[in-house]
Length: 511
Image 1: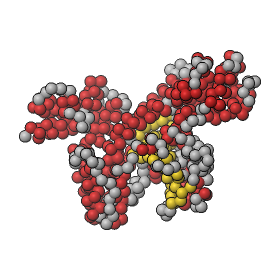
Image 2: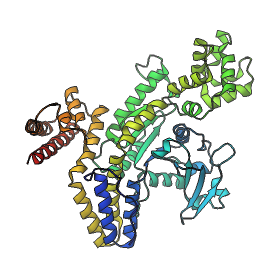
Image 3: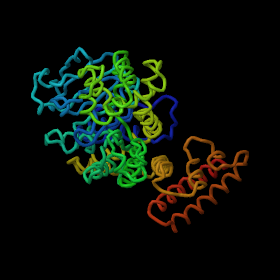
């Protein structure tokens, strides 16, 4: 039999769903066939590994640029080439390196370029054909990667059918061995959400968190927000940033519960600021632009062709370089900042432009939506992987064992914590509207906090707390029954269950 990787963390609660899943995987590995046991072992290993977050979206949406910005290093190639058609997993490592993994399981180490990037012709350097490559494993000394494994994908709807298929498999597929598939996703859009974007997100949610899952493991990113035409968005008032925010909100309404939130972001600006692309050379060139007479400067910043062609002290090569690292909108923002403060340092300008990029908000939401809930997201994905393994394994006896184990896990009170996290995300993001008082009440029901805090009754006796929990359980059950829509009904059912379990806990403790 195959040994299962992953042990419970020291000091973790004995009743945690993660521990229950690990124990279940260990038991299944002893009772299943070797092939199925290997798949179960991979599920257990994923429970003990950093959360895997895929950066996905359509071709040319700027996914690799965002990956570089998040990691803080320009390592993923952004130009079209052999490497951009391969799935790349970025993990933490003490030594920077990239490994080419073939479908046959062979691994070949390929050095990074002199600039510290993955070579565009990485498969060729490894001595294999691109179609032989399963994916790339890049190991980097990045602080973010100590908590998250970031998966860069080639792009859905790619002209390269094989590349698009690899993305689909990595984004939504649990293979027979339950290896493939990320546990969370940053889905990148530009301008509009298409039908296949929504379909990909729906399939991802079904594969990783069950068909009834809320948006606990998906964030949408409106990339290239600086290209949104203000005149195309009502109530934007001619402001690019406002237009991007309104368009992102419209995308979120269109996608509904498939994503926790849609955030506007300028990936190129974030990449340049985070990876050292804005240095003394660029800032000095921007200072020259800031000093150009008003009429010429304003005209230059209207369009790319004017920026490159109008008479200016900067040579055309320098202007092209500024467009490559900042684009026209970033150049305009930098010039405005330098005109307001001509002595602004490189570091301060970089900070100001990074704020404009929206990357800080993406990082903050990553921490709130993904990192802080990593255990719950991974547990939900593990349950989905075990269910997928039960459907795909050929041995009827293994199928019965896996299905029985999943049913037992779903009946555990700890599993309800996953549904509660999903519902709280729906409420926090406004996807399901409720009065503020009810939202605050539902958000207080955080597992691990004291019952008095969850019930909003500091100083109450255990009997008073139990009475209050039972009373609120009844109220929310009635709310679910007479709710205005299915979203509110689901919230009511989950909150009712949370209060009922809390009442049981208080009652049993009093005995």
